[in-house]
Length: 448
Image 1 (spheres, one colour):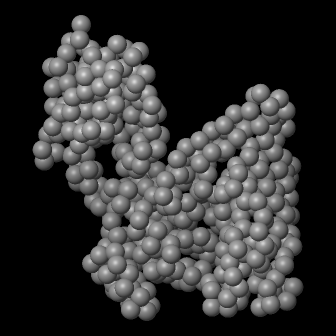
Image 2 (image 1 turned 135 degrees about the vertical axis):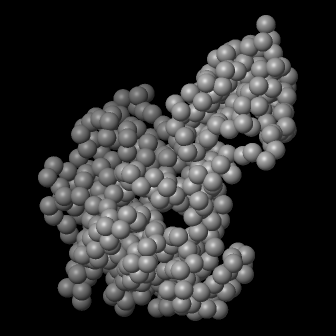
Image 3 (image 1 turned 90 degrees about the vertical axis):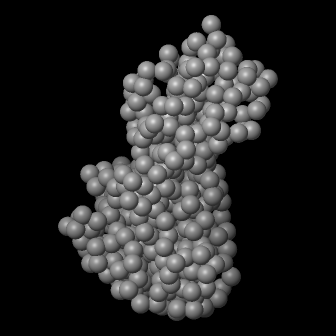
């Protein structure tokens, strides 16, 4: 009996998929189909899978060509499957031509031409109209967003806004955008959603105007610097059925989500302490965003990342909070420690723009601890450690590019699926971050 194997995501199952499986089956007597997990698709940069794994498996089964269906969840699985199932022919679409030639050592490799004029991408765009995204700001974050958005289907950047038209036009020319604006109302009329990547103090007004205009909002951290502003914005979004998200990329990264799941599962016992550090050395410059009076400094710039694991693991109901800081000549903090007290846990945040420290995340429990080495906010790997070192475990997941693609993918999914619960960074967690920022700024004013 000649055995054939093929693999695929088989998302939004269509005639092209059916034809590929039909031709694959015709090459032998027994066809095995490997269906990829969503996690594996994310690892290989595919951020736009719509159907669940079970639905995709059911669609493959119902077409009638697969004699056996397996799940593919890691890159090196193919060689093992070919040997395990005694495969004679490996089949894949022609758009992968040459990629799997290494399997010729184990079996025959056949690349089948794709069915023309049919693609999952086109069906996905047809089902969920592509979102026109406008970017507020033309600095470093905006540039990174342009590099990342191409990995997410269903969304495209169409325009940019900057109060300085010359900056907006230069950005639009560089990234071949259709339009550049210096008038915010006209900019909002041209888009479906906005990515706010402007200075901290402008976020609230830009977000408020966008929501009033019926636009979805993805806003860079810190979204706002006052608790009442955050509550107002989330209430506006809820009342109008719009998506409002704070863009803390770590919150949407696969490895960080896995870390949270392991920590909450009880693997390290009851959690009593979370320590998070983020520092980067930035030369003192009165014109730099990080050194602006009132809104500048290490805490407003970096603390959102450090607050994320604390609030996710210990909750939003802290009972006490205090700060210790060292300041620059203009009163901006160059290094800050924040100490949290919860009912039965403690936490520490360290941020610095003029003092350098080890940028790790440490979660301490009664059975062990979780450590993410620097830079923890770009979580790729972490280790679960125990009293008996032989029991230590390491976990990893990719954090490709700048990681912005993960939050963009969630933004698209939340827009297209209004009933979907946004658990990765909740409104209450985002509001609590704004509350902490406000307490810090009030504390800094009080010390002046």
